[in-house]
Image 1 (cartoon, rainbow, N blue to C red):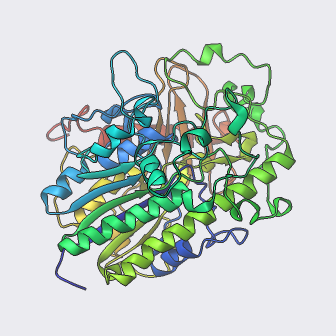
Image 2 (cartoon, rainbow, N blue to C red; image 1 turned 135 degrees about the horizontal axis):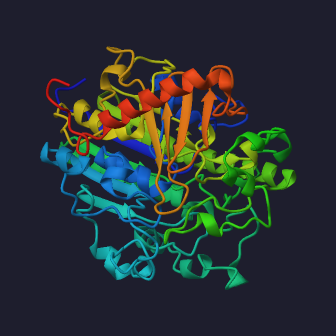
Length: 506
């Protein structure tokens, strides 16, 4: 240990099911992440504040819920001139070198009349712009970013500059908007470029460079290393695309009678002829409002390649951890690994993501290693990703400002407290559509309330961990439901101090 402030390294994946870690699942190999779990904690009940990218990513750097920071949906923009500072701003004021490497997704792919975005076309492919742009941006003094996944046409930005530096100048022909131009359509499930051009390789390489630069300057660092995988499309380069046998993959299922007890939009996901017009009243695309079932053979292959994407990313994470070892920084660096939200691989008949608050979509993998963190623990205390910003500030020895709605988890991570919160809240705002819901989760129960609707969801996670039986209308759970409603209201009042100020003496 040294007297220097604790370095902070946040490593994230994208759309990562909580079970897709080797330490929890023998069907997948993730030695680097398993090492983090072995040398630190594997937190079993971490949740995202919203099951889509932009809202949760914005919560990570603001310490606020999407309903407060304003980026409440895909297609919305996190304001660059927020009235409150980002966590990177505060750490930077404390002497930290702050950087974001990889996927950002704070801004929309398409601009609305009342907003601008640099994470949209054609700006993403204007490389002269990106050669001159490295921040400051959202509290990070240095950024190197890319917006796409796999083979998507959104490739560009700093990743494209790097590809050209590696000698691959034809990247525009590969990352095409097929099937409009299917001359460059990849083989199904195979990322056809050589592995050395992969964006996971780029993310790790540039992360290592920023850590080395901070170390050479003698500065503590806050680095967010933001990987793009295993978000679909399901594509991996050789040999990762065939690393796992589809026949070994276990499919998620929709149990008989499950839909009969669920709100109506769940049933629509299982019908090819479903009319979603009543549920799509917003200008913003509500992901998941579509037909979900995938045939078993395709789903098994999807899962196998999904695991391959995770394993390739894990190897690159190992490079970053190796950099900390080589520079002698491992003992003084708080390392957190998590993701922005979960992923459905057939569970409850669902695929990918959407306005569904099952554990598969909102519970996230979460590993932490660092100074004072005991080894090998598997805490079941609740955590929300909105807690990251206040916890990082506490780890840096800085005060947590009152505008942050998350709570510091540092005492829990370092073994001085058993829990930091009694419940978590997950939001899905999609005004003015009917799908506007909030979910309350405590140690045992999960309650989802839909605005202006009579239906809802209530699961007893102790007796029904697979969330197969919705108890919302079950008379046997009426008293429990009423108690949860009361706790939910109290939690809402406590988490939104800017809207519901405490009354003296109350």
